[in-house]
Every structure is written in C-alpha cells, then in structure tokens.
Image (cartoon, rainbow, N blue to C red; front, side):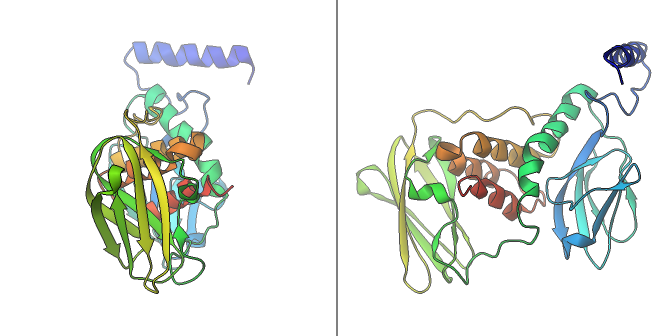
Length: 292
C-alpha cells in the first residue's frame, strides 16, 4: 500500500466515524491484526493450542499472546486455553473452535495498547522455553530474580505485601525480612517458590532478607526502598483486564530498567487482583531480563 493509499484509507475511516458509522475491522493504526484480548493460561500440552489467523497458524502461542478479531482458537489433545477478551471477560476454549469477535472500546487507544503487548512483550515471551520452568527440587538454591545478588533493586515506599521468589533447593522454604537498623519486619514461609510477607510497611532505607530452604541452605540479599514511587509505564492502561494490564506494565518496567526495578515489577503484578493469569510465566519473563 502506498503512503497516499494509506492516508486515503485513514481519511475514509475518519469520515465514517464522524458520520456515526461503524469503524471497519482494520481501523487500528497500522492495519492488520485488531487485538481483541490475550491468552492468559494454557493447561495441558501447549503444542495443542491452535490459533488460525487469516488462514495461517500462529507459531507457538503462549501466555500474553494477543488474539485478534476473526481468529479461530482451539486446543487439541485435552489441552485448554483461557482467553481474556476485551469487554467480555474470560473465555475457556477446548477442542471446539472459538471465533474471536471484535472487541469493545476505542480503536486507536485500545488497539495501540494491544499492539504494544505484541511488539514489546511478545518477542521476549516467545524466546522463553515453551515448557514451564520447574521451581524447587533441583539446582542451586537462589533468589529467582538474578539482580537480587547485586543489591541494586529499588522498591516504592509504603505499606504493601512483599513477594520474594526463590528457585532450586528443596522445600519447605522460609524467609526473614529486616529493615533499616536491623529490626525484624516479618517472616514468610511456604512449600512453593513464592514467599510472601503479607504486611510490610516499607519506609525509605536499606533492607535485608535471608531465605532458607528445607535442607538448611541460606541465601541473603539487600534492596533499597526509595523515597518516591517508581513511575509505571502507561502504555497498556486501555486494556480492560486489570491483571493483564498489570502484567504488561510489569514486563515493560523490567525490560526497560531490570538493573533497578525488576523487583518492583514483580510487586506490581503480585498486587493486581487475580483473574486467572498464569503469573508464573510472566514472573519467568521478568526474571529472564536479569539473566541475559
């Protein structure tokens, strides 16, 4: 399409909208896929998930993959895929094909938000192994976020729950958090890799955490609570699913500033209301930025 053709098409679409007519399916900036939602969970063998788009299969679909108006989605071999469709909520898809309908909302605003997920988050998610990384039971005991070892991570101040993830070793796991001056602020424990301090009143200063696995191996790390809140990306604010919106913003924050804000990125997602997203896959992506 020439530049003249493109601007002519954009002008025609604008005239249709001004006249109260419905916008065409290709009204999004740049044309092509009109994002209508994302994959939030894949249960079973992910190779069984099929997305047929304009007669072509989407390669290795995964969590946070954008689905487009007109996509035909199905899952074979007993697998199931859950979609978060804009304006419609969660849709569980099995062997029966599901046709993705056009989304609600502004073509320019919502469309750009989904396009940013495809352009910024998906390329990195695609490079991760398709199988879920197993936490615990093997390998060296460590914090899942590699930058914890550098002591450069910063958090926003204020009261919040605090998530610290570990990998390797053997459960059960536990952790102790101390704040400026060495005062103990809380304890966390669990059988899995996610250790949560339910209440942590984080005032500015330097903090220390010690984690221990079931065999008695300990690891320690430090992080700093800043005197001002971390500024989050606003690119994805138009996405209706608050958990997906938080996941996309968290990934973008970690991608841009992994040396200092990857831990804050995980806290952003951890604090979002749960709506069925496979958060483990998103945490894996956030943690991968520090391992590259």
